[in-house]
Amino acid sequence: MIVRSLLAGIAGLACGAALTLFLVFGPLEMGGIRVGAWQTNEHIGASEAGPVVRAVVARRGLLALNRSETVYFNAWQDDEGEPLRETCRYRISGAHMPTRWWSLTLYAEDNFLPVNGDEAHAVTRTDLGADSWSVIAGPARLEDEPWLSSRNAGHFSITLRLYHPEDVVRDAPQTLNLPSVTRLDCGEDA
Amino acid sequence: MRWLIPLLVFATGLILGGWAALNAVPGVIMNKAMPRIAATTGDGDGAYHAPRLREDNQTIVRASPDILYSVCVFDVSERPLVIETPWPADGNYASVSFYDARTNNFAVMSDRDAGGAASSRILLQSDGSDAVTPVTLPGYDASHDRLVLAPTATGLVLYRRVIDAETDMDAVQAERRGFVCTGLSDR
Image (cartoon, chains in turn orange, yellow):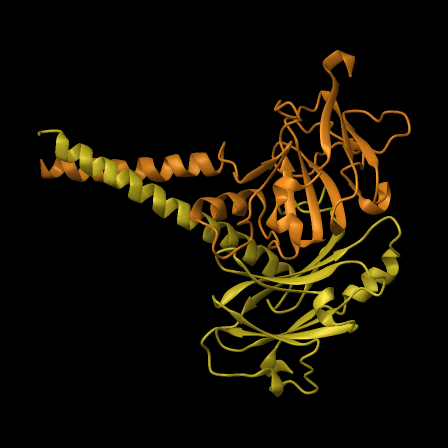
């Protein structure tokens, strides 16, 4: 009985650790508040973050700033809840956001910039203007429109960074008018 | 009963193993990152001014191509560190953020906190260490200099500086060379 229990304890420890590592380095997401296609977690970068958020942030966004400086919103899905795919084209449209400056960056499935030689990984408020704007995310440039290249990005994501956000961004993110992420077409239609 | 106790022990182990792994992940990731960065900064105190992020030089996940990064690894177990930081002349965002050995962002100072000064000095020391107060720094000015206490002896200091389509890159590269980290006893 003692040997059996000892072996069970060791197996439990090993399985618990393995399961956790699988989840943290696999499908576990940061969770938090959802606003349209965008998701944010108020504990990113904060000392009071729980162990789950801290572990996932360490893997997915090491060295993130706390929310007094920057609020991060991530979109892994479009407005209809479908995962973002490199073979589809999306229009990301927005308007004024209550912040000092902002940027949009497209990351590949591995959380790094996609390696595609297109040099179209990010756009900023300086590029697009502070008021009404739109940008295309897709595998190829569309005419003269601002472009985020998703070529070689797999199931990609987009990060919206709001630098020195106004209080409303931290206090009531659900009320924000964040950019829409509309799928235009996919596959051979793209 | 024959299997009940082993099953309970297994379940307890499962929870404990999961909890331990969850708490270990940030420290392990940070401990992998710090030596890599320290190796690029020479003596471990100097600043490493990373080249502008491109798809072929990425080392940290989800870094921003619109930010220039400079970084110091710190170890304040034996001496405080003085961080000198320039603030952007072009009015763009910049900040100095501090991360402990468990990845917590325990302090940050940005250009907005500097009251319009061209630069700041930040004295970083171990929380609970013998008092080394900011007034020991010649010319300390509380309006734009700071004292920061580190909850762990080791960690990272990260300087971020926004660049955009209108940025004069040569001027900015020269400007950020003013971000330096020096042990107090070296001064």
